Image (cartoon, rainbow, N blue to C red; front, top):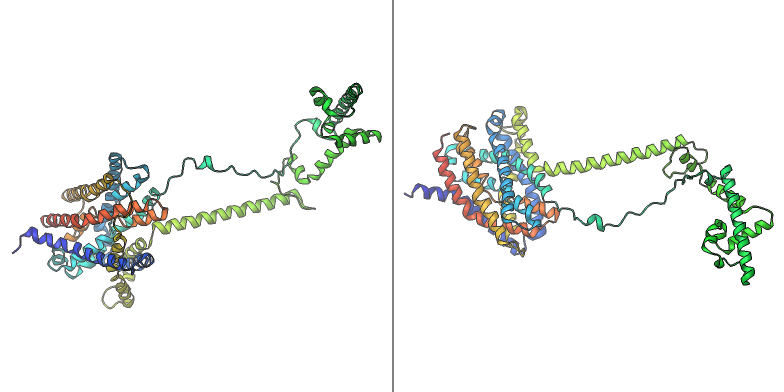
Length: 513
């Protein structure tokens, strides 16, 4: 007869051996080109959108009820504490090993977020298939169903954290010089009237008329000075002979060129003051601005909208208010759309199926329609169970096809690989085991059966969640580096999982339930 410790080691090793064999089959299919990138993506989508929700819903809805909820509460609490402890230790690990800045969040996430859903589902189902195991003897035929219900009830917390907290942590930080290098936005031409700053700039006022006369007098003075200079030099009408002071004393209509001077001379011959035409020209420009300018000077801005003929200012304001309302409505629709998209990412189908299973399990009338002896909708339950049976092999094929390329070409420093492996595979399991055992001994919670206690311990032992590869792929944030960390963790877990599971089975045998 084999020693007890050897028997426990063999029992705990069998789930890992089965997982390795199925992953090897997925790796072989990937190398042969059967599970190529697109096929792997489609199979992964089937697992995520169909197989896992069906398995979670059927096992959880058939096992849970209101009485169980009062007993099962340590499962999600333990998962939340495991994630919190892992993230804190991951932050300390990053402080110690000092990874490159772009890999700092990868170290924290890879250390803190374990595979508390998919991998425990496979391990628990395999443990219950072993008829000689402690759990199969204690629970009998209900072992697999109850064990999967335990895992499903605890993994919705991990799904929520992975697609909310970890999703935001893995976002690429904005570049510090992005704003400095971005081109300045082009200014739109202003359609508002420039309000005169002095009374002399407003045509038709006495101050404007006096200012025009002054300009005309200064012009005649400068013109007489230029005539005198031209007589002495023999050149007449050239402005280049004037001094700087004389040029500054010239009115604006004399500084614009010879054509303006000729027009002014013609006006003088016709007996009209140049300033009068200037005033009429400026007043015409003011009138051409339209009633929008009048609204601007009266304090009613139309924001560049021209008033239609026969349209009152209050009608323009009503149209502008309608446009603002439409813009607000469009922004509200976009905000609602973005919020719904983020909600669907956080509350994904596996999480939603777990919540639906809880609702159906706690509602006895609905539960009796799907489960029990000769239920009216039993055909629906059988269909869901058939699709759920494909979850474990499909998931392992996808995992093997993902890991078949090895660590890849990513140049991850060896201190980061060893640091993440040591913390995630050794330190956190010891700390988590101590937390669970002490809480049970201090009667913080009561475990209904050995499998319940085993699921609590397994939560702290698994490698990093595969979903983290999906998250970094979404953000295009060092996918190769995260793949390298995942590869070495899952290779290491082939040896660490059997050792810890043997230890856990020993703890379970020594614990009174």
